[in-house]
Image (tube, protein in one colour):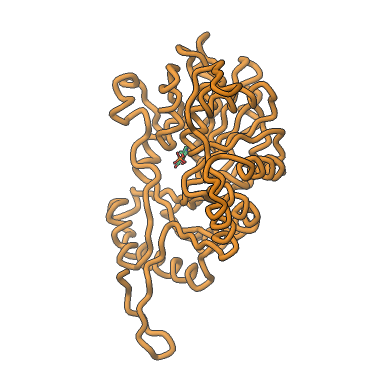
Length: 384
Ligand SMILES: Cc1ncc(COP(=O)(O)O)c(C=O)c1O
């Protein structure tokens, strides 16, 4: 890894670049995985069941279904809740899988705009797009930041919509003191390594509804209700026991890691509070973000450089920043032809001005101070 020369205690040292995401597995985590590998039982089995029980209990849901990725979680959840031709309200400002999996079950994603402060689905905009074919809403707790859950539930109740929450980035987030994984109808998680907890690849669905639980379990594994007896068309989206072993260990540290993410975010926000070209992350009044990402909006009108140049300058200061997301989904080539007449000004604007900084739990106080110092230097260069 390249580094920046720094004077520290009168010595020249090399400062490593601060990565956006970082992961260090503990000896305990590695041992538990190795134990399962040594048992020779590599498929889905009792360790997956134990992981599901512990996950459901931590988030306060009745049931959990482990799957092979966050994308698989969404695919199974949509397949359980929707029929071909249904319309689903989806925010345009999110990762592709929230919408692509709607299309994969033959339903239609209807793109909605997001709130300019929290970057999550705007329930008022979504309400305007409801038709007799609208059967579900798929809000995303983007970057770990809970949506306006109360308003979304009210909307869903009024129009009899199912809610499929995309919580891929939101393990450990809360709303009105309640874990976001405990809300109806289905909540979908990812365990990709950049997430708040990981199993390598992997995912989980939580629900309180017994019949949705049974249906998701069938869909996960070829619709097989008895040995080679298939009552539904399904997938192979099973997790494995050695991945679940890592999940069980990761779960033990989840809440502490989320606490650290929140503390890091609070520190960054305090330090950046007087930077006039920044709009800092904002939570719902009753939301507690789990800060999978710390994302800032730039006021480009007051700057003499573009967002991309700004990120290059940060890179020179050894700070990794990235754009989530540079293109809203209604402008993606794969969706554009069906969404040609749609204008979603907030999503379009955010994608031009947003960037994410490291906020992960392995950041030390020294790292945080390094980020703040580098950032202040770059802001000075970038101001008109
Ligand atoms: C909002 C969102 N939804 C869904 C996914 C899909 O998860 P996975 O990568 O585990 O398939 C991701 C992963 O990046 C995501 O960020």
